[in-house]
Length: 333
Image (tube, rainbow, N blue to C red; front, side):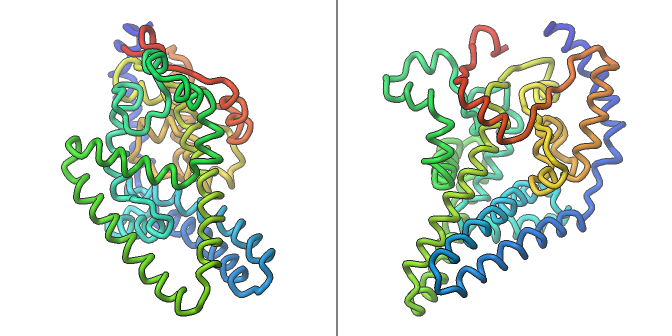
């Protein structure tokens, strides 16, 4: 099977690159529309909440603002690939404007994400790998084994956004020698985050609103953490495998999800995550078309289709109940 895939892969991807080339042009208006839509709703809800003296209204508005802030965080993913608007300078700046308020070291993440795209399914040093190998699991003490059996619930509902931020900084330091710009990006991120929150805290303290400020970010952190952690777990958990070269590996070592078009738009097309991994230069609005083209070519070459599962919530509930390990003797090739 592996040899068959390896033999077919060069011809398949030569055809795919030609077929997909027209989809690689970025339309800035598409990215701007996503940013403006989510930003307007997020800021409107936040403004209503901060304008109200009623704590319940404040909390409810902040909760729904956080949902749309999570969609903005997803925009930062497109921005680091420069496929949000295609304007490199704008994408770089907007990613930081979006991410620094929630302490997210997006510049560091962008460097790690580059490694992830090259190493997913291939190199166990992948900084975004969340699944253990059977050997790693067996060598862990009992409490850590218990954590990995329930890692979905723990990471999503306890770790949250702070867990993601901590992981980015920790992995950034670990891989600082693998990407020459990692040290620089880590320093830039920490500086930007400190400046933003120093300015905000100065104003908040002058208005005697410190408790609201902390409550606001606590709600934001919890909601955004649940959404982004769920997405991170779903994209690759249980899919690790290496088949017939880097690009073909990405098609099968990554999960696709069937969602309503509006959810797919807000999530930047990342429900078609296999397509994004194999062809990261395709902008989010063209990923559904690319998915159909790739499926047709896989069928033409008598290769298995990419799988597509049913929605974020249903698939998350299903996968979280079945702890999965990477079988080193079978899946690492």
